[in-house]
Image (cartoon, rainbow, N blue to C red; front, side, top):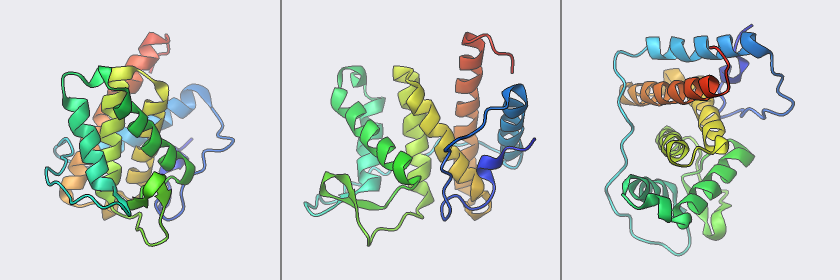
Length: 192
């Protein structure tokens, strides 16, 4: 059995994950093989970075890279657990990704998709996966891990389009993902 969720360009033709079959250990083995193959293609793993640049606020659109940077900075602070707003923002961007399996460069107010916005900026996907990993560590909510898996599936599907640094970022994210999945499997008594 092969892991099918990374076959083809999932930026252009996103996965739906509807009616996804679960094939037990065979599926888990193919998942782990898929992830380890990607890690094997990179020499180093580097955590994705976030821009420190403050983008001028514009009332007519929300710039995704700035929005993700704000979230990441809040997650790194000491009092992130008391901030429900930050997790509301994470839930919002995750919901937008879950619906379209795309992350747009900018959104209109109220986080509506703009027809003029591009969805091929792979750095936005790397940053969202990093945020979801950190959110899962903090809140232990499966929807964050599930979202991270889907974002990483998307990134793996375009692996050869990634820059050298982006490949290293993806390797770091996959290592985090495998760590999360292994801990969860152990907690549930599933051998992997």
